[in-house]
Amino acid sequence: MAIWSDLGAILSAFASQDSWEIRNALKSEAAWVIGAFATAAGGLLVLLLYRLVPLLDRHLERTIMVWSYLAIAFIIFWGVIDRFVFANQQPWSTTIPPLLFMIMTWFGAAFNVRLRTHLSFAEFRMIMPRWAQMACLFLDAVLWFAFAVIVLVTTTRLTALSASNFQIVLGTDNVMQWWFLITAPLSFVALAARVFENLGDDISNWRSNRPLIKPAVIGEDT
Image (cartoon, rainbow, N blue to C red):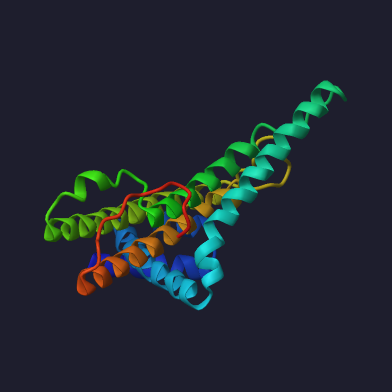
C-alpha cells in the first residue's frame, strides 16, 4: 500500500506547484508509475492533437529544431562580431547556445523516431519474414516507449531539483535553468506520440497486407 501513498504524495506535490515538494515526492519509486502513465496519456493526447491539426503533425518538431538552430547561429554570429569588432562579450553567449542545442536534439529525436532513422536496420529487416518484421516493429515501439518513460522521469527529477535550488543560467541574472530543462520531458512525450503513431501505421499495414518495412531517409517528409 506504500506505493499508493507515494502516488498520492506525488499528485499532491504537483498540485501545490512547489518545486521543493515535487523534488522530494519524485524520489520515491512511485515516480516510475506516474511517469509511465504520464508518458502514455501525454503521448496519446499529443497524437490526438496531431490528428486534429495536421499542420502540427508535419511541422512541430521541424519548426522547433529550425528556430533553435537559427537562435544558436545568431547568438554565435553576433558573439563573434561583438568580441572582435566592439571588444565586448555577453556573458551568456557561451551558456545559452548549448541549452538551445539540447532542445533541438531532443525534439529532433522525436522527429527521427517518426522517420524511423534511429538504427532501424531496414535493409536487414526487409529480408525477414513478414511476422518477424512485425515483431521487430513491436519491439521498437516497446523499447522507445520504455526509453521515453526513463527520460521523462529522470529529467523531471532534474528539472524539479534545478527549480528548487533556483539555478540560473550562467551569465544571466534571472534566466532559470529549469525553463530549458523542462523541454526534455515534454519532448519525450512528443516522442511517445510518434511511437504510437508509427505503431498505428504498422498495425494498419499488417491488416491491409501492405509492406511493413521501407528504407528510411533522413529529412524526408513524414
